[in-house]
Image (tube, rainbow over all chains, first blue to last red; front, side):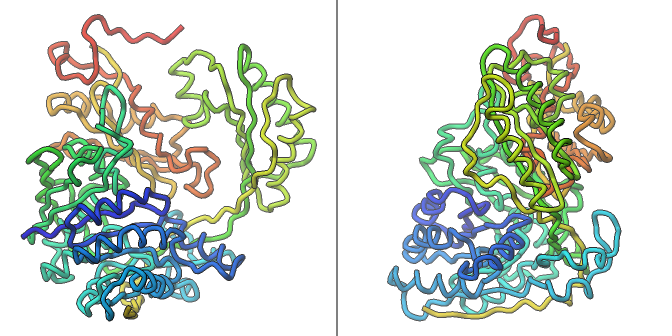
Length: 452
Length: 125
């Protein structure tokens, strides 16, 4: 019997309803949620400092659990989720609350997996930064938070201890999806021949709809049926780590060789050497076969022994960004935008804006790929242009100057300038993320069990 | 014939720190050799001049018809530091759809969304 693992989310802001659909109609053994980006932990730390009432877990925890728990309880689907962020224990307690609300049997177990946060000892544990080779001690004084990427093992331990739901802090994304395979098939943590394909399937699932036709459609070139109704993926995994990737019937989207190829290499550098905490995955031997409508068989992903170290993300305060925009339209939009740019450059000099970098874009012309590529494509002058201004500065006071000078464009600028009312927050903090490595043994994952 | 890469391959980009990977995937196996031959790491870097500031490494996965370009210094210092509106570089891969590539006329039936007839690429007026 194949093990049925479905995706419930690919990031914090992901859509909620497809998770319910997978819980209700996916006939799943496991439903897995991935809700973190690189900066999620540090953003949560910053927010917690400002607002002590912030519980520190996924702000959509309630919305997600309310939608999926009834279906999961009916089917007996277990849940693995990294919605714990900086407070997995708090998230587990909250899930217990929702289990009671949903009438779950008394004694239903929820496990919290923590231990990834190593802020207070990161400088003792790490040597150099992977980005530029500096000693990590160079970050001393600016560190907001540091966390190591845990693998699947503590989740497997929680499952072995009877957990129906496991909620974690930072865990590598593929590990969330592979833990059920290790538990159900009895794979050993050092069995890289099985963990390679398992982790590879985890990688295919971790970005949710990106493998079912999301982040994919291009009209006329790569059309996708009913893209407003994209389903999240389901993997039917065999004990050798091969799997059929599919989705629930009567849903939008598509699972094809092409959606699979795009997702296989998403965020992958060397395809022969994709490092996860559990195993090093080799995608170069992958075989893909369409075995039915919206059914693609993925096999022969390979694995190599895991590394002796785990990756650490170190988040640091690195200043501020000030940002705002205003608009031109109609014949001559570009010439007015160009004068506006010149005026702003002069005014930034006049007010002495101290910035590490200043950028003034014309949205619709050069904001995304820059001027050089856009000029080569020789586009006609756009009918509308947004002038978008951003500067990175050391202090919030300097960053505020961007919005203040854009304010000035309302009556002291160019004719026919469109402006927003300046009520939105036009500055934000920059939390830079650096990477380093720690010895695997330095991490002590903690599994805490709760019961409904 | 000479035409835009979008008729030959599809693309996706992903981010890690200040590095973007752009995957270029041939629509058909028979188109892949032309892709592999012409879209070298050097040409990729030249095409993205001004956007990609660091080295570009190309990994080829021949059985799947995939080229994976790893472009360092492509994300304005990294997702959180970047001043670019598209700070994750999600739209970064789309630029290379405009890369010009030469394929034999005999393979015209394999091209994606490409109408037959003269196909000279000219800059718009």
